[in-house]
Amino acid sequence: MTSARILGTGSFLPRRVVTNAELALTVDTSDEWIVSRTGIRERRVAAPDETTCDLAERAARQALDAAGCLASDIDLLIVATTTPDRVFPSTACLLQERLGIHGSAAFDVQAVCTGFVYALAIAEKFIRTGGTKRALVVGAETMSRIVDWNDRSTSVLFGDGAGAVVVGASDEPGILSSHLHADGAYKDLLTVSTGVSDRGAGPGHITMRGNEVFRMAVTTLDALVGETLAANDLKQTDIRWLVPHQANIRIIAATAKRLGMTMDQVIVTVDRHGNTSAASIPLAFDTGVRDGRIRRGDVVLMEAFGGGLTWGSVLLRY
Ligand code: COA
Image (tube, rainbow, N blue to C red):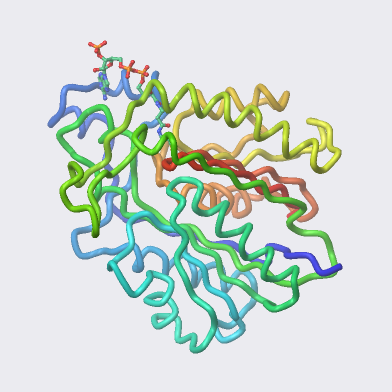
C-alpha cells in the first residue's frame, strides 16, 4: 500500500535573537525564572517587515532542495499557522505564488501549536488515498505579532520561525499513524479572544491560564502517547526519537519519562527557539535531521498540544 514518506526537511529562523536578559530590561522577570520554569534561554523575533510567508518561503525552499524536488512537483501545499499574513488569501496561496506553483491544492490549517501535526496527518491521508504524489507541509509563525510584550506571563514564552517537509508517495513505510484530537470546551485557557467576526471579545493578544494549560498538557500527552503506542502495537523502546512540540522543557521531560526515554533521545530546541507554535515540530525535526541524529529508518514520534485545546501525534519511520 502507498505510504507517505518524508523526503526532505527545511527550516528558517529570523535573524534577531532576543535573550531572557533583554526581556528582563522591559518586564519584571529574570533569566533564572524563565530558564527554571520553561527551559527557554532565547527566542527569535521577525523584523518588522518580515512576515510569516517570508519565513515559510525560506523553510520551504530548503525542504524542496533537501528532497531533490522542484516546486512544480508539488501537488498539495499546506501551511499550518496561527499568524497568517492576511485574513485571506491563505498563507498557503501566498506561498504557492512565491514558489511559482500553479494549480495545486493549497490551504492553511489552524490548530495553533498542534497545527503542523494536523497538516502532516492531512497530507498523509491525501497521499495514501492516491490523489497526491508530493506534498509540501509547512509550519510557520510570527507569534511576536500576537504577544503582549508587557505581559511577563506570556511574552517570555513565544518566538518566530518556520519549518517544512516534503512528503511523497512511497512503497517504503513512512508515516505509520496519526492521532488528532480537540476539545473546544477549553477554548478560554489559551486564546487570542478577538478576531475578524467577533471584534469585541477581548484583547488582540495571547492570554493564557498557564497553570491549567500545564496540567492539561501533561495528562493529555500522557494519554496520547499511550494511544499512539497501542495503535501501532509498539513498546516504548521501539521509538528512537521524540520530536515534541517545544513549549516547556518540563512538559517535554514528563512525556519523555512516560515513554521511558532519556533526554538524549529527545530533540530539544525550546532553549533557543521558545514556543514557535505550529513551527516548533518541523523546526526541531529539521534540526535533528541536519545534525545527523535522526537517520533514515529511525522511528520518530511527533506530539503536540495547544490552543483549542488541540492535541495530536504522528508516528513515522524516517
Ligand atoms: N517572570 C517572573 N515571574 C513570573 C513570570 C515571569 N516571566 N511569569 C509569571 N510570573 C510569576 C507569577 O506572577 C506568579 O507570581 P505570584 O506567585 O506572585 O502570583 C509566579 O511567577 C508563579 O506563577 P505561575 O503561573 O504559578 O508559574 P508556573 O510555575 O506555573 O509557570 C508557566 C508559568 C507559564 C511557565 C507554566 O504555567 C507553563 O509553562 N504553562 C504551560 C504553558 C504552555 O506550555 N503554553 C503553551 C502550550 S502550547
